[in-house]
Length: 336
Image (cartoon, rainbow, N blue to C red; front, top):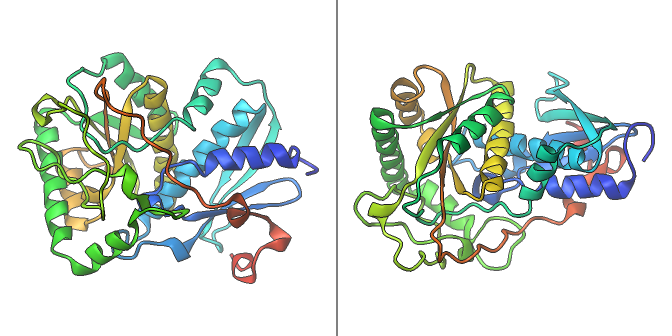
């Protein structure tokens, strides 16, 4: 590739790292197009989860996480990324245009890139080990560098957040359309997208456990002797000053930064968007947890039990399905 982009191998390697980003229900709602001197990220509205994510906030967050993964990947490969976010107001699904310049990676960037293939969404209980305050401060700094605020939900804020998680779970349980969509995107055994059965445990019904989505056909078992009362899960809330498309995109980038930072420390993590998918429940989190700023993501972090087996990687779509030259894009993609 000429005039600004490195060779095809480097671009494909970076995009392959980008699409390892977490996305709502592993829907992978993105595609990439290469120009003569730039790389472009688009939201794929065909992958919008209309019952789970009616306003598309989770979709933009997912794309933002992929954008940050791309930046990290290129940095480790020796290329600095200059990102132009939402470059064309007339094309709302064109989320970013990326140009590149030579760059010498530092140790933090290499460590962050090394975390990408190791990171997993771990929905199991955590151990009783306490997460060091220094680790939380590092994650807070990583979020701040992306223009967002990360706070630890403690005391009354944790109570209100746990209540919001419970409320959203119960509301969704009574929504047949939501349950149908969740079942369609989970419990999968051989699929390039969706939530695999092998990566999801059954909802934890022990007293004090946080509610979780009831994914179809859960096959992942909790580690032996892991008890809910010993679970030292830390709940983090990532928020922004505004709630526009740009803020949501940056929140997705911050989500990636926090998750990769956590993984570099050896922590397990799990993004939670369910309490923020219902308007009134999200408003309650805004009032009681974030103090008026707009909550965009909730994260569970903690130490996996010592006897917890490693999780398998979740599948990803073939790179050829998400990366094409602009001139080779299907007509409905070219219209963006």
